[in-house]
Structure formats: structure tokens, C-alpha cells
Length: 530
Image (cartoon, rainbow, N blue to C red; front, side, top):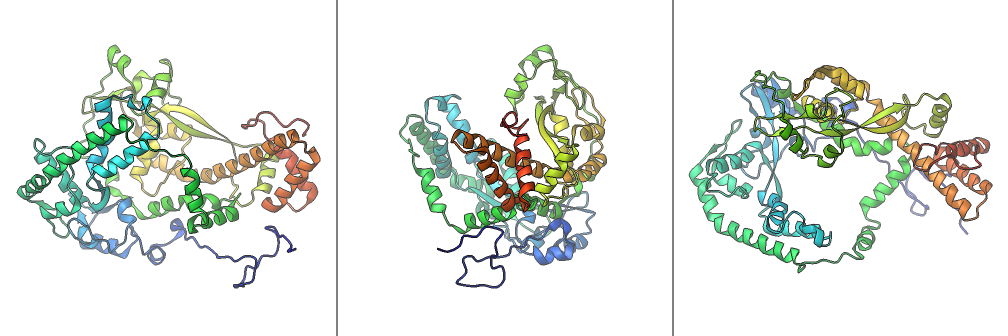
């Protein structure tokens, strides 16, 4: 019988042997945040960004004072052509009125797709789903596909704006649920390099008239299909489908690669890096210099407080359950404003304001715990150690500092800002108004906190190992395994998956991990383990 080998055995990692028990492939992932512009052009030439020669030449050609380059632009090829106006990217570049080079592509969609859910609530009430199987929601996706003219298409921002301008001009004639296709937009615009489109509104109106009858038929079809759905005539059975999908996906290239990657990177910082590579690329490639310019209108908005009736009637549309659950005497732990003081009136006359949830990290200070975790998880940077991750309720303005910072500085992605960091970055705060933020201070704190991402991943890997051992220990004892058998099993895991070769050390670390179940989802320390 062939000898079984584990991860520590001699696996042939050089050359290719067709008769070997295993074969391998090395994977290389370039780090955009560590590369120069020239290296980005070399390794990411199938995409685009502020680093590309084409972008730099356009800025020089048009005398730009800055750059607004969005994610859609960065994530498609430098030689891309707009399906509406047929312009190449190099012709789509144009300067804004304030001298910013605009490099923007937009995801244009059929607005008919947005009206399916509101229409079924309008026809059959907001509680229509209460009497229907939950799988009916899936059928709505099929109805959306049947009744819409197109899904989502990538077009230049000028073509996307042309669609909106025409519908504003003919708002009393063109149904708000109607959207022009990219091809139709191309029939009523006059494109030119480096400029916004000129629109022939007569041709645009003619395009609407040509499609009006078909659009009305789609509206009728939508109502008919929704009626069939609500009355149970489009029921769809899903029993066994999940297993079929798993079977059909078995041994496909994606699942094999991901399984091998996860096995090779388990308990290392690299396990998370593949999931953040897109954000790292976009941080290196996009820019929004217009956000750093002073606003044109410096006039401060009048602060208006809600009346008692307005406060009593208001419910945060973003998170109504959380708003209703927060007591009236609650105050934001960062800016100290009360629940009522969070409400402010916008230009439209509508009230806004709410409470959001933030993750807060507590650092580990115990030297023994730090030493053991560093021994078990050496493939993290381990410059700081997270002890716990908790959730706190804060006002929407304090929570929004992160997203506002990312809008200001596209190189910042998913920053960690503690409550103290957010408090320090607030220059001024007032009831029923927005915060004045020191974005330079927030940016500095976000950069200083970069280690928290790896530290949080290391903490979650540690807690996963604790829960795994604790759960297996409890189940094993119930099933008749002795304590020694289970500890020997855990010591074997630590040898194979954590590189702890010394049997005594592996045994001690296994016992220690079981004691760390305190405060986890597994309750108190395992009985009998000290």
C-alpha cells in the first residue's frame, strides 16, 4: 500500500513529473500599492489608471490641473470604445470647468428593472410576500429579465448624461421608467473628442416614439406576470437544486484553485490579501481631485430643529429598526449629540439622520497570550494584536467619516478609524447639522492604523482555531474519546498546520487554546483543562 504523506512530507516542488502523486503551480500576485507607475503599466496593462501613459498624456494635452478617474474607467481596458458614441477612451477625456481631467465611465441600466419591486407592492400591498413562498423573490429576478430591454451596460459619462437630459426635457411625455439603449443614444448625439455631447432632441423624441408601443407592452406584461406570481401560478420548486449546483461545480477550475489557495494560505496574512487585491488596485489607480477643491457655494445652510411632531413621526429610512430601538435619551459616544439632535433638514425639505453600527478593536496587552499567538500564527505581520472586536452604535455622521475620507482620497480604502480617531478628526459638531471634518487628520490616522486589517484577520484566525478545538473537545468527550486522545489529535493538528514540531510544546499549546474559549461563542473554559 502506498505511504500516505501530509503537508510536511517531501512533495515534488521542482519540475514536472507525470508519475508523481501531485503536481503544483506557483501563483504570483503583484502588489499595486508597492509598484511604480512604470511597473503598473507593465503588470496591469490590461487595465487602466492614473499611472497609465495614456492618462498622463491626456492630462498634458488638455492642460489639466487635476484628475477625476473613477473605478469603472480603471477596471476596463485602455483601448475600450463606448458602445453609444463609439469614441475611444483617448477621445473621452475632457477637462471640467475647473480644469480637472475627467475620466469617467458609468454603468447605464434600464430603469424598468428598478420598478419591479415597487410595482408589486403598489398592486398587491407591501405585505404581499407574507402569504407567498419566500422563493417568490427569486422569480422576481426572472420577471425583471423578461420585462427590461437591457441589463447593465458600460458607457461614457457623456452618453449616460445624455439619456438623463432627454428625459428631463420631455419629462411630461417620456415615462420615467423608460431608458434609452446605448445604440439609441448614439442616434441623437453628436460626439467630439474632449467635449460633452451635443444632443438632437428631435431625434431623441423620435427614438422614444418608435419604442413607445413596445414599452407599453412591457408594462402590461410586467403587471400580468406579477399577477400570476402573487396568485401562485408561477411557483417554482427548489428542492435538490443546491446539491445539483454543488455537484455541477465540483472540480471546476475556480473551485480547485480556491481550495488549493485556501489550504496553502490558511492561518497566514496572505489568505485575506487576494480578497483585498481589487481595492488595492483601485486605490492605486483612481483619483478624485475635484473633492479637494473648495466648494463653489460657501454659504452655510440654515440650521432647523424638528418640531415635537416631526421628531415623533420620523423614522430613519436606512435602518428603521435600529432607530426605533434606540432610546430617546441615547447620545452618540463620539460627538455626544442626542438622538433628536441627529435629525437635519435637507434642501428637499426632507429630514435625515440615523444611527449606525461600527466595529471597534481592543488591543491585547497580555504578554503570554501575545507570545503564544505569535508562535501559532507567525505568518502575520504581528506588530499589534487585537484582543476583541465589538460593535458600537454611533450617529450616521460619525460613521460616515470613513466613506467621506474615501471620497476625498481615493488611495484610502476601507480605513479603520477608532472612536477616538473619529472624535479627533471632528473640527466642529452642532445639533441638526453636518460635522466639519479635518480630513488630513483622519487620513493620517487611517494610514497609521493600516496594521489593524492584518491584526483583525489574525485575531479571527485565532478565534476560529479556539472554537474548532473547543467544539471538537466537547463532541469528542460526549462520543467517548479520552482527554489524552483528543489532546494528541490537537497536537497533531498544530504540528501539521502550525509548524509546532516539539510534541511537548504542541501539547501545551493545545491545552492553552482550550482555555481561551472564555469569552468566545463556546462559553467558559473546557472542564478539566488547565
